[in-house]
Image 1 (cartoon, one colour):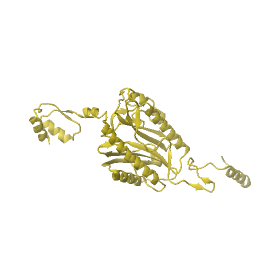
Image 2: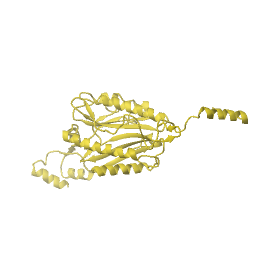
Image 3: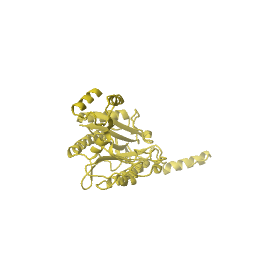
Length: 327
């Protein structure tokens, strides 16, 4: 391979010029150097060239996101107690491939007690009533990628989870509101919480939880938006950029958490969100439960507080049996 490249350079009179390489395997790199070719970093040049998307590229990114919209619609209708994380991954993958995806890189499916701290892999865990569950769908259509989180609960949601989702959404909306030409990545990152505010010792430990990144031919492109780097190394936002913004917030219960992400195109006058599956409020998937008194509330705890009548029963029993009744 290295000899063929050398011959190609010689035919063009370029054998003494540096060769920029974007991605290379070490054996190829060493072989090129052995042939006397000076190899230089071509990745930064290509990365810079991909920052601003053309109209066609934006159309492809829209199409790629549309396919994930459809996958989330199918997933929302299918989720219920008894479904496993890996079954959800299979369903999403089928929808995407049926619609023309060429590559499903990952479907991160995270549920229940696995939500906090945040892993990035799915398991065979079974969904249960009241579970939080969030997904990140990463795939490619004609080379153009997605990074697209959505968060749900199964059957009903705890008040702690509702509060976490609201906080997560507010941080995301604050960041989106700043997206327009002339703003900077530092301004966006500054509205996000410091790592210590949500349980991490420093920004490196919390990296990629409150996060933004360019998206195109790769999942992570320029610009990067994070408190770790953007406050000191700010980057101007320009029309034609396409990036994803993602936020995370842990619940006060210590194990559930919310995760949401939107993909955004920077326009001449502002921005356009191209991820369209609903996420402005926490969505409840699965069957709606009914009791003799009507629909069961979608906001409820796994363990309900005892009714007044139950409290009176306990107090009466304590007096009759002469044992102490505790709170």
